Image 1 (cartoon, helix red, strand yellow):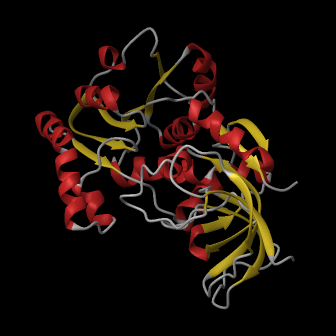
Image 2: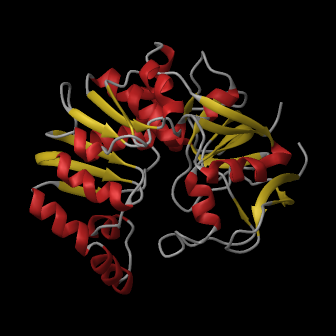
Image 3: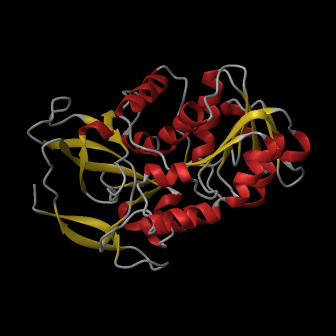
Length: 337
């Protein structure tokens, strides 16, 4: 194994393109494994981080390697690693402050990965961790949905939506979703019960008495989401204003907490008026939840949905395509054949 590796990085915040740079291969810590990355998927958090949208919450050093989930082969294990050995095929999502999977090697905590589903290749497996864990946590940890509940999944044909619809079906939920005409047959095949073409109808004119909304759009869609919920319902948002619970989870300082309190005043008012619960969240890694997801995939209950695969040297094109917001399913970068 060489001592240096190729990685896709930016040198400062802003919309400049990623560049391929040479970096030392990381040395895994006592509880980490070094993964030879075979594939990594693109997520909106990649370009949001690049643009500096999250710098108030997460501090990064430059050059900053992008990438937030991976699939690959264990190359080396730290001295306290018991669950994995060299040669194991794994997939996962690193913890906060530890992005950088658009690289040939990545050191990751043993509790942030799981064995890859046996029925997936590396590209398919790389498409799962972030969207899978995000959907799982939205449904189970924030909205506490149970069989028979009704949930709206916004933007059903995107990376998160395609996973969340399938998870909802497995959980016995009634799933409504918003898509354009192009995405209708896809979301129907994944198990959506109610499909709203957002170009022809507003979901708030059609839906009512819902238990949950998985908000991936924010803005007017988030405001209107409050109106379709029954009292006691909940919204899990990836893009709305952060809340004080988020400030607590991320141990933010007083000035940032004051900013969040100010930014969230409108959604707090809406939540109170409609007697519903609202939470903004960033998902957390979980090997236990990943293993649950692995089982669902191996049982054929959930399948990866991939729109495009790009070679490693075309990482910038993959980011550009993701930012357009038209992907049907996931965008994956093949780091190594």
